[in-house]
Length: 481
Image (cartoon, rainbow, N blue to C red; front, side):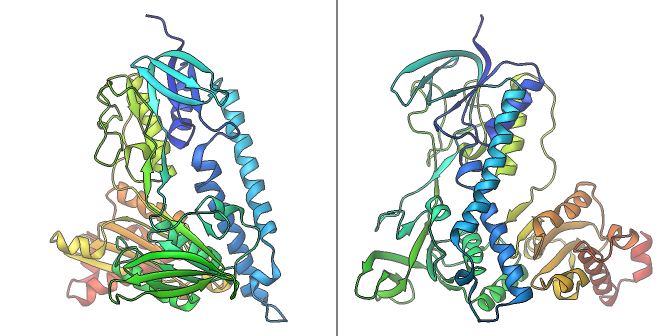
């Protein structure tokens, strides 16, 4: 049977883009369907990863300048710098990346169709345009890469002026003096540290009783110290009852209760950022008679090759409910393409690193100290504090720590956890050693450039070996193994 395309991809985010690029390398004819009439790249390029990281970089530069040179008039960064300058920085980054993505698609002869894609049957996709016109395409394979969207709050409405979501926060006209963030998790933490670096007073109303509980306990303690130093307040187990303007005091009032104190409390702020959970973009996506299984929350269920219950229909990225990161989605989209066309490909082995683009950054991979102990593994840890790194001292970036978790008997590296500048880059050195079943001896026996942040690995390795030695295991015999 002849089809219009070898693969139709619904969604142009990282999973869809990666699948398209890989498929063209197999000389396949590809159509990418995108619902946004103006932009390709989905949330990755236009609402989430790239714009928020561009804003972060601008805020980081401003904080760096303010820390290094201060201000002779004692002004806060938000008094010296305009939001339009930060947005200009973000805009230039987005334009550059959008141009690059469009160029890659054209160069690789990927066709695009603008409109809402619906899977009619296992080989047919119907695209409805913004003008309410429908076009039908046939294909051998289909990839669903429609991603996810933020959920709406229950007790108040986002007006994108006083109450913002993670999209409208990227388009505000000024840097707020005060900002209340309602939410928990990584995005909350990232925006809290970004705006704190601009001088904004931050209060987090955390819906959970813990904050970033997946972090190694010592990294979490270090994070708490930095939050306290930055003046960022966190109220745990909060329920927001109402958000309303107070015209007499020219502010926004946030009315809330905590689990510890069942009385209504009020916070005054300039603006509110709501960071909710995410829900899958799976509604009205395919004919309900098709054997595409959804879990209880609406995410698409796939096998290890990202195939749904229909052998030629695949799903990858956030729509599958797996770790919601662009880096993971890029890999899944590529592997889905390989599976479609029976091209041998190995899935990533070992642990997957996470990265939090806060100021400073957080990253980790592998077992935490407590997880290793719960598994009954005899581990030792090695630590390197940023305040002891020459390069961090030069840059006045001395907050943070690098922590190694390794087996006591053979020094095999089991986990790396970093809080500090360039953590999301530094993690990959530890990842490489872990992927080779290596030990912390690598950092002792090899030359690492000085001064660099990577020097933290060498310091942490020596710190860990010294702990092993003091525990009664001969230092020499350990290094000779």
